[in-house]
Length: 313
Image (cartoon, rainbow, N blue to C red; front, top):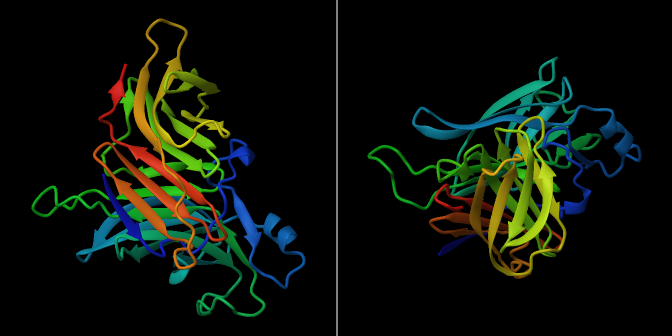
């Protein structure tokens, strides 16, 4: 297994609020206002349309790899895009609250966040501008370069692009493996976990039903497939450090329930150091990538993605 450390990848974050997840999607979630001098910041934030990402894709323009982003926010607001806390772009929302941007891809890793403010369209990206109300979206777009060589003469290996938020399942936009592990209509996406062993399992199903989860043949629990075809199950403090075969079974009420399994490893937290606060570590292997990010203030949030080359039953 190859492990790469990308220092200073994350400028900040929140602990993985596993028990607070209430079935909400990534969009529509909002963090507290950054305006320290505004005693009514929470009420202001609650009355505004939060900034969210609706589309994320990778493209090329004039030979340069770029991320194409779009989203929604409060009409007439300014959206500042940041990579590890550094300003990279600023756009203005339309009267309908829609915004879009193209940003350069730089370096092996990116962590892009969006901050909504009431700054005018010509105002600079000054982080300490007085009298500005800022509301930070909870979503972060991660792009991690594939360390594999080119797959063709002019075709680089596919990068990982995912969207994460505290307490919500990570959404995989582009997998370096080209797809998700699947068995018939059932697929398993990312597995997210925290230092305490709490885990979020998630995936997709083309058929309605319930999904039962196992870890090393021990049943963890069940969850229902949502109307949008997504399923999510949250388990609290059930998985100590170690390697497990995680199995998902789609219960359809007949003898041919689709079943698939993946090899999951819960790694220890990143060592806490003053210089690495906010760092990101990636463990690459042929069947899974494991992304661990230390959170400012302590703790670790981890995400595991899997290759379609999994063991199924």
